[in-house]
Picture 1 (cartoon, protein in one colour):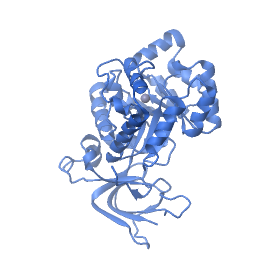
Picture 2: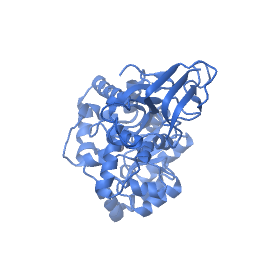
Picture 3: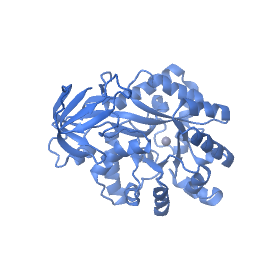
Length: 388
Ligand SMILES: [Zn+2]
């Protein structure tokens, strides 16, 4: 039963700073190894495996939306429109046609190493290219400790789509426009029957929202009508207050990708309004083509962008929760939080490093100034990750 002692730790779903805590985890021999069994200030009778002084223990980051398939095409299409880069006929898919399997997997592995080094212990990937694409993702992570939520893309064949669902954790749909009403209803039904996640990009661009009004009806309305109750919606960059209230009422998860939206020039997500409406969004670094897989950059950009574009002052603690606790909730996994029953996934941050040492507030320091180089150790399922 490995026991960890931390002089300082961010504990529970509120990320409260606590001192001198013991984290007791389940052993390799239990039915559920690598989970947190207890968090306590009382010294347990069992010997302490590791003690952490002069360093902060916090939950590992949850990168709740990525497309790591385009890791071999970083910065491609800079300055071009979203559709021309990642749309169905976009540059990204032309790269996929030309490159061989081995290089694609190698590129994706590089991104996983980047994530581990920056303290990301769980990520959720929208994997394109049907069953084949999902196989590549599985091959990428097969011997790596990172926790992966693999959301495959259904193809035109229902048989292939069911295979995608059986192999992965659910569907990640590109948009409501790429399937017919009947297809959406079928995909939703098979997904629900198998108890898997159903996620979709919604209201990422202004064009989509205006198109939908003119020709197709409201984009969000269509999603809710045909998919019934999706697990989570990615973006909502152009959602209005009424739409946000509706999403909050229905209890549907949301993931925002502010840096991804900025790269494509599509807008800035109304995160302050989401929080006011009662939504607890996760954060994602989106396509590797457009953004580094680094959650420190995401939190910093979100806070500064909200102040500048939305005239809203976000609470840094809340933003840190988006990058950890809320991401875990949106993905329906017990991750991103130091509490009983959750995965023993945590990272150690050097608060004495020159770039954060004199910050007046730990949450401000972590979200506005910290960087991957402050991550000194990473633990997933109670085991230290060494190779990154
Ligand atoms: Zn996406």
